[in-house]
Length: 179
Image: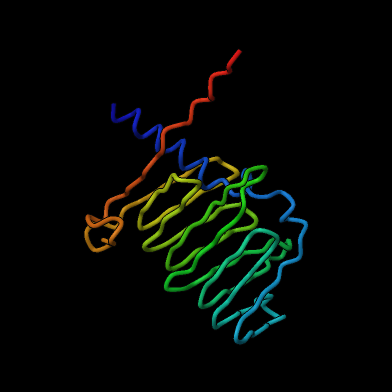
């Protein structure tokens, strides 16, 4: 029974965190718009630091935080780290009238590895399904997800014990056809 629960949780996480598989495909072709109170650009290090009420939008994707650092590696891949109390993201799922959203104190995205990590008081929600943990990671290339608790010191109102918590709604059965 425990193996079945772990398998269900892993399947749900892969479904929930697969931003590349479920995100609105047209978003990738849209321009990135950034708003902040200030920005510092270091061309030599290929970094930009946006601070103060940061809002990033790209199509249906929206990221909000207190600070956003964007780096570009030698091959041109983007890497970003968003900080906030909390920092949040929301994005429409491809082909569905549904959003995937999440929150943490820090969210890191590695464009080369297509990997998202949420740190401290993290949660991700897709539709009515939600998972909470102190650390949530999804590697889209490996189709691997991991959620780790922070123990009692990571307790939140949603997870008073600090343990990983998931709520998975039952699948809706198709309505029977009437003759």
